[in-house]
Length: 296
Figure 1 (cartoon, rainbow, N blue to C red):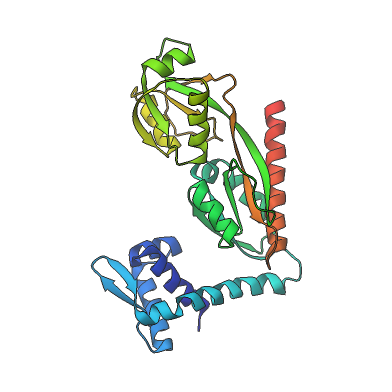
Figure 2 (figure 1 turned 120 degrees about the vertical axis):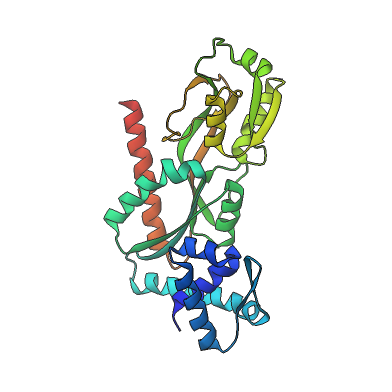
């Protein structure tokens, strides 16, 4: 039985559709459907059924799903175990949107040059969801916003960036006083369900700043785009570039506003610990080089 076929089945169940799973696996829908048919022939039972545009597991599919996940995980571990301490195997990584574009590419490029036997599965998500995935063992590491509570002892934390809060306004805004701008112009709020958004909310509460809020969302690049079009002002962390191209913004520093910490959370144990440590080392080197560039 081909482990790739089992993985295809699991991804189809997780995505709920053939098309979504095919995009995640970088396959055509036809190729993915063929994998499913071959797996069903090997097992002698239908594993999925179509319901409109969605796909759901059959009773047989549900029965084998957890075992399939374990087999896939074991196969990933075997590569790392066979390497006998050399960084190898597949790392399951997550990243919030700003880290996915501003931090992860350089880190992976460093690691790829040093340890070409490491493979990667990268999943975007919110800090809350990725934190839970790492602490539950479903993911090896994630680039997230640091939570405002201690991380478990079974995990490690390394801060990569201190991202001070800034007020962003349209480029042609004349006023310079942050408090006046925040109180009198339409306010676009960074989602309070996100850990970074909670830092913004705490700043507003601490300084008793009443806002004329008309929109709340968790996509920082979208917030910046809306502000650039003159639709309001916002308080956001000064996240790692690149920012969206073509923005016409002003960034105004906010004294005593605090900062969002973005870093890497990782599991300290497991069969892929050598690859995991190599990833953390690449994160640390990226952070050191970034600090040198800032201080030059």
